[in-house]
Length: 364
Image (cartoon, rainbow, N blue to C red; front, side, top):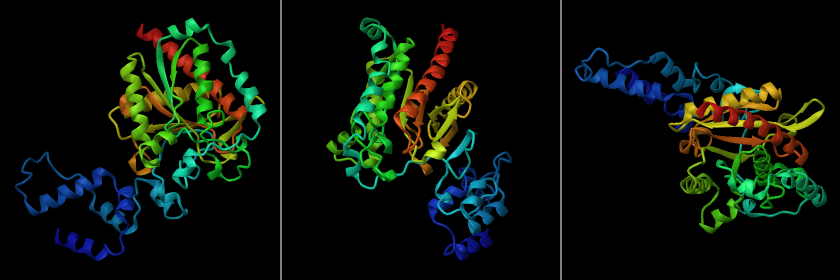
């Protein structure tokens, strides 16, 4: 015990930061080390032979010295590939081409001003044409639409996330933000909402300007999920039929990674994100896997996979504690155009509709 204490003191100047150590060591490692230390000092404290420290000292010491956890391969790669060590995203299911070097990522904006900029549309005529052909004119009658049970709530925690081809003069990924709902992720949500309504599924779509609301509260980017949580809770309180929560974002990866071609048609690829830090984690993960399986069956290669995020690599909850049918979807990346995005949305709507109506049959 004394040796362990002295050893830790000796290596502490060389040891990694607490954040990095947390990334490398699991909660069970840390808890086990603590129990082991208590046992070493007071043998009667854990007289019950069933209570013991399940820990490998050699593994813990190795992790302390090298910042590499033998059971987590990403910690080894992270020491060799610049920048990779900051990612703690787990790949539950890897889509075609997905690996540890091209995980979905969501860097914060350079400044809070970026989340409140409208920006000029690059090709307004094309955007308007796509909007007019998005299915809105073919929706069920207004009365039928209003009578649908609103089981799905679509919202956008980062409503300003946009796409370079849709913004006039946009050149670099940091330019891919806009409060114009014709060219940001809200447009993606609008398309999905219309598609689902056409398939007889009721939807409530939140088109709020989240950047403006954050600014109005004197909040910043870091408060994004606190704000969207208020929106989701209000929606679920006001309509008890809401069961499915879909938070739509876009990835920050570039086009080669976020685009695929299926039967000569180009699609923006889809990331499915599940938060690990909530009680609905396992149910939401199974739900995400089912959707991913259907996507792969009907549109091979459309999904980039199912990803699990903890608080060390994102929010970790993503409001998914509010429903066991809650996911975060990223449609495409900064380089995808409206046609690619809408193709992906239409495909997902077909898959979700199949899942939804099958579940309705089972549940009566």
